[in-house]
Image (cartoon, rainbow, N blue to C red; front, side, top):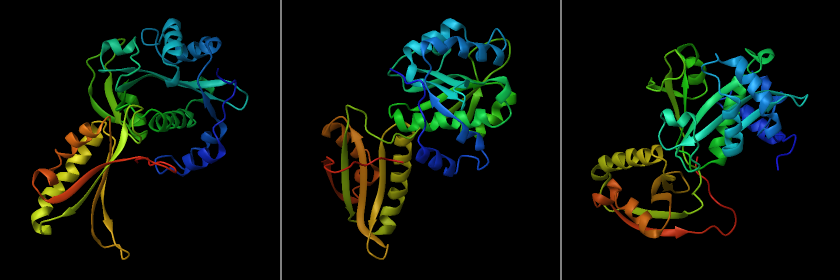
Length: 295
């Protein structure tokens, strides 16, 4: 069951305001709480939706009801101090961002397609929309580790708004929605935790060649890890240093995988391994006190 009022904790708000990606003057944040809507609140959401988009672009009442019933974790409302819904962001998951994505929800889809970012008229142009969307993205990043990217469509005059919220413009969209041209935007997510079916694995290594010999392959290793992260892998890589902060202790890489064999398949693609630059060992890692999380 969903509580009538689900406050964001004070500590969360404080950390959110300190985030470098959040405008320092985004004071609207402290006035809002966030939660999914109940079924009875969907007509109120529909009223905001209808006042925010032309009739041929606005989601129907039935569409909002479908998203509330089938994709509730991705339907977040901004609630005022008076317990009024002043805006919302709603999305569905999909395997590919295409026409079908506008009307269906695939719970295991790698892409999260945002359909609505809307604010009630009295709260527009006061920072509420950006606060709401930035909260929504941060919430998805922390809670939904299996999502690879957040995608959406926007018209030309709103591109700067979404870019300021961390999205990148990909292209004019082939999706037809209403009469005007739309653009496709995306925000790639870096996975921070293993999926429920995955475990942590750790690769330790020491160089067995001179640094000048290793350096080209070390650069290739960094690009390889960045590529895997962009594709949705939960992986991080670095090196150990001594008490003076000087390298020489060897490399350390954490990654998540469904099995030792899957983790080994990934490690064997590492340019440092393929070019015989390191002595290495792969082990599973099981936390006994606490856990680790990527960033």
